[in-house]
Image (cartoon, rainbow, N blue to C red; front, side, top):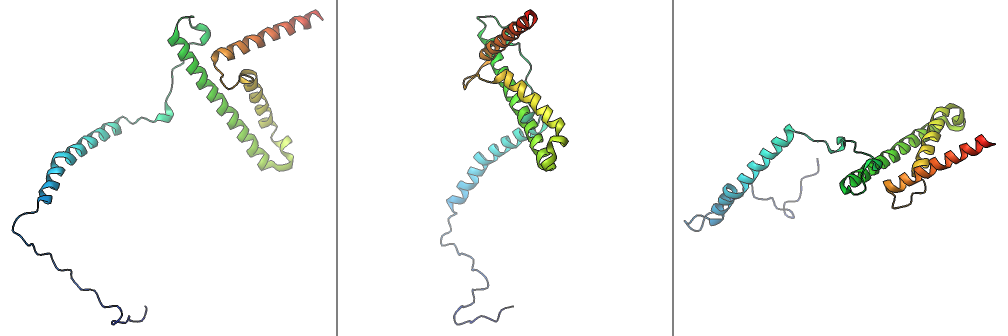
Length: 176
């Protein structure tokens, strides 16, 4: 414990704070205003808010578990059905994001295995390497060279072109 302080330099504060003595016998209007605000504004808003929170607590909704229903592919939409085409585009975008995340997760697994195994990762991480090669090839086949403004129509055109090329190569291989 420190030495006792110098009472001449630092005088001791008063022990009790004196109660303020009212100068008038009239009540303070701020007291009435604050009570009126509490009764007319604050309490009803608080009660409504608590009621809403109780209702939300009963029906808890986790936004990150949202499940979208599968919609028809763009090939199944009619030419003039704008809503169907829009839904197919949104479905394609969700599928695109899911595929991106799949590639990212597989890549992280491969990196973790490489970090863990060190020099001998090619032998010990053969399963992860093979899986990453398959996923990356599938992703590249489907989404590579679509450009920044990719959509379901461009992806479908690319798929059609790939199928035509495969058919052409198969015919050439059969003829040779």
